[in-house]
Image (cartoon, rainbow, N blue to C red; front, side):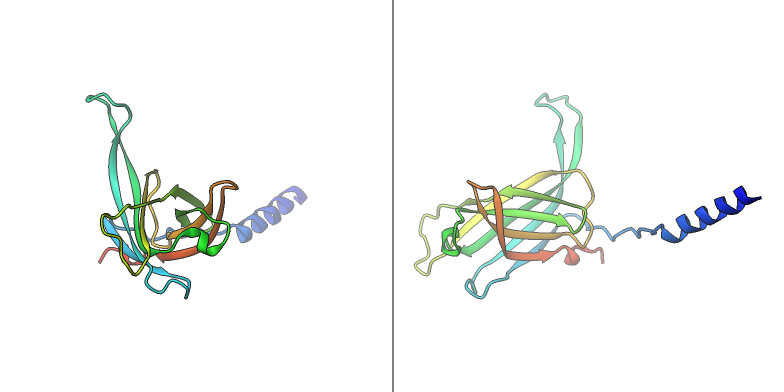
Length: 167
């Protein structure tokens, strides 16, 4: 009898401490979101993130089976040189499902034929190896980065995928 009583208490404690994880609403593909500046020092800086599904072959062979992945591509414009903010030498794209997983990828400056006399440079990058569906709480960011230390700096542009919800 004591054994059953003890077992009942253990089961009751486990049941009360178990959290039911509610499924997050998922993004609809393809979608795009505007990335907005987080710093007053760069009022013109904005960007856009394209979130889409891509079908990628496993090998270069024409008969290779394909796998589906999610892709995050970013175009960011009117960005000053990263060194303006300190010990940074590039920008990186960063996508994260808060508290769960994140992905970071290098962004590259775009050489313009006729640069703006006002300043600012466009930067682009993409990452297309995301195997999980992206929930609407996913944050997409452009962040400062130091290639020597591999440390990410502050967020420069950001938004969530809330606008990617199915209508």
